[in-house]
Image (cartoon, rainbow, N blue to C red):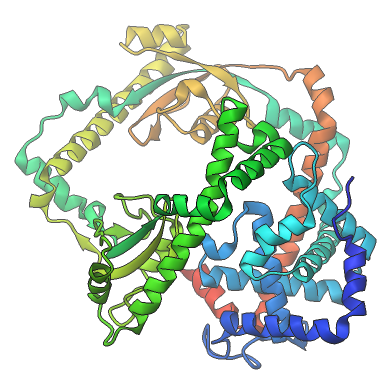
Amino acid sequence: MARLDIPFFTMIGTIRKHSAWLWWVVAGLTIVSFVIFMGNGGTRNGGARNGGYGILYGKTVTPEQVEAARRDFYLFYWRHYHEFPNRSSLTQADMDAEIYKRLLLMAKARSLGIHVDADQAATVADEFLAALGKKGQTVPMTMFTDKVLTPEGLTVADFQRFIADDVAIEQMVHSMGLPGALITPQEAAALYERDNQEYSTEAVFFSATNYMSQVTVTPAAVSRFYTNHMAAYRLPDRVQIRYVAFELTNFMAAAEKKLGSTNVTAQADAYYAQHGTDAVPDAKTPEEAKAKIREMILRQEAAKEAGEQARQFVNTLFAMEPVDPENLVRLAQTNGLAVHTPAPFSATEGPEDFAAPAELVETAFKLTPDSPYAKPILGTEAVYVIGLDKQLPSAIQPFDDIQTRVAEDYKEFEGAQKARATGTNFWVVATIQMSGGKSFAQVAFSNGQTPLALKPFSLSSEEIPEAEGHAEVAQLKQAAFTTALGHVCSLVSTADGGFVLYVKSILPVDEQDKASQMPRYLAQLRRSRENEAFNLWLQSEANRELRNTPVYDEMMREKSAPGSR
């Protein structure tokens, strides 16, 4: 396996060699980041605890440890999702909780004397970078630093520490989860058969659409339905914004001029040579792939140019006095920029008028009349500067405004009720007639229903194609595995009606497949049990140790919130 451009152990040696000056650089970066992250640490989440950072295993948590854990978590999140958590749907409270859990794990690792040597960490770092490459080519450390670490304010030292910390945590998972991994091959074989034994079934589906024509719609009935289901017509909290879009396409020509057309083409060719068709999976030819790569390079540079203009616009906007939501419109008009006002949207749905990035939606709901603007937000097509137009609290929509929709909902509701009533009657008839010797298909056809043979499925099946659009896979599994062989289940209600399932036969497990898959299945099962045991241990530790940290109150509020488990 290829080594890093700068071997891991060499980098550690370099840090030691130049520690007299490097320490002040690293410390300066840490302090700046810490002020941003924990600036209100002394008062957040219900007040300060021991200076605002808390105590873990009897030792005071330091600002430096919190910042290191934050950077570790950012890299951990990027490793799994290829985006940083501050650009995801995670809230700050979510991130704080995860950061403190990581602090807890590292404190425990230190107390257990777990040590990760440089060679071990270097191997894991190599594997990390190799996994990012294509066709067995390891991503160079310099490229990873330039493309991932530096833009987020992270350093090679952060990456080193993250790798070492992750290896230490992995060792703890094995240690604390060991009891769960002690599973015998015999037990694994029994579980394999349980998970992979297939059921051959037939079903009759009862759908609302087949009964809606039988529903009589009257004004009185629709009005009564609205009154009884008013909660379904409540609009959530919404916000309406104004925004100025610095479209990336407007900066493409400038980007090409800055980078140089020949240079961009050479970069695209080099990238394609390294990654091949994997670079652009939807491209049909090498020429199309290279053209798409070329466009991506130009769009990245265009985003920088658009972002710079957006920042200049925002700097002027924030300098305008007094603060007024209308300042966005005034400044845009002065600069000859169009102001867009999309329809109000909720936090879960987002705007329908354009492809808004998740950060824009989240930021929109943080705007207030006293703080009506936000920093530039990068999207796939533009850099956006948004401002508050109005906030719309949750409200039930008036009946007169949605009467047609309510009438349709009423028809669907009543259609589903009729479908379920028909399905229940069918189940009763099928139970009686099948006990008299008739087959499930005979009963179905004699009662005007069409039985559908489903492809055999097991507990491990992820889809049942024939039932798509009729029922959830989990519902079909539950019905099949709780119904005796040769019998029918009672009606199972679905979103638009229901179904009755007949268990025709239980198929034997393919012994050849079982023999070939058992080694991998056993390894996965042991790993799963190991993780379960570790998570139980971690939950116990967190419940005890995080009581003395500033995230505990927030975690308890979240746990006790309606709908939480």
